[in-house]
Length: 138
Image (cartoon, rainbow, N blue to C red; front, side):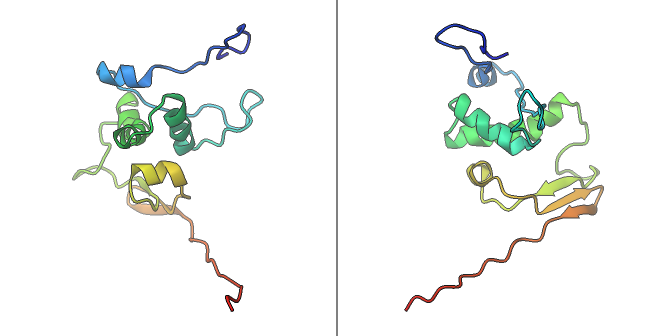
């Protein structure tokens, strides 16, 4: 219960992510509460979970952010024992595509997924919004 019933100072239910990574432990991040009474703010976004972990685990350095993205991609695939994960000849072309410059941009902006591709077929796509400025600068 992450210290809800602790006296002062309250503890928090956060694993020592950096220390485990340094010890060679494969750490992944997931999201298990989607609009539940326990956590009504959950939306299933792995980027949201990684963003929260960046703050709680004090992982805001450039390499830390790269590792956080790996925790919801490569490292999570290892936990789930997905043998055909990643970009490699013969693997199924299943991926999500999001507009971001790098790991920091991905976690900071948390962009809407542009395409979801499963076995080479687009199964979902989001059209980017059209913005317009309707003010006169004169």
